[in-house]
Image 1: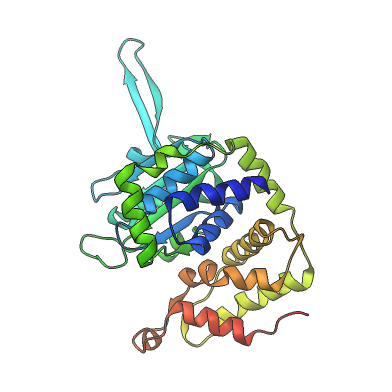
Image 2 (image 1 turned 60 degrees about the vertical axis):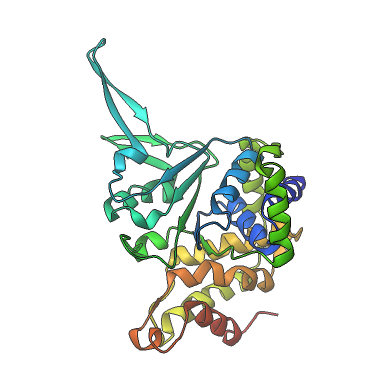
Length: 307
């Protein structure tokens, strides 16, 4: 796919030394799955979101989540027009192709929940009216895993709306040197040119949905999901929505690698990022040093793979 090749090149020009993370982001984007970036400040989360929007010539909005942010600040609301003596609906920043929800865990649960309908169904309901969001509609949310003062942890129901949770991480020494030199000369994101339009992305997402998956591979996904529900280290396993997300992300992984059908290897390649954030550890396991990522890896090793 030319779109995939060009998008990889565009993102790699602004985020150095992170080819796997870029691929996972493209997989989520073309698989029509929202992404939670769980990472420390300053590693390029905002730049990455802007680069995707610039690459598809899409509308980009960024919302800085704060404790005093209200749902109306995201969704919009009615504004009184004194000349006409009527109320007109003013759209909020959620009406965009790419929405960056920066530090999403700093807003109250009520404000966080205002995103749920949009993320799940691509619509917004306000004052009895339902509005369709333009396509593609994609949410990239960020949160800082280190700082917890003044934050509201995302509930499991909201974490489940994210197809993937990713971590970019710090660059290598050579890549960071290149970043220093590159940003000293000019802002690389300003040099990005659009490689497609929003309609092209929607067409590409439809192609991803058409990637074939045999029944035995789909059953393999179900077996992985079931194993999370039966693992004694977990208080909460993956939901059916998690299975749907893993199905879609595996299709997208096969698609961006030029494969005509989904294999178990495609499923394995995206399983940790797709499933781990949906799981809840038992208290004993949590304080024994067990991580959700390790649980998923153990399950991948234990569940038999179809031949």
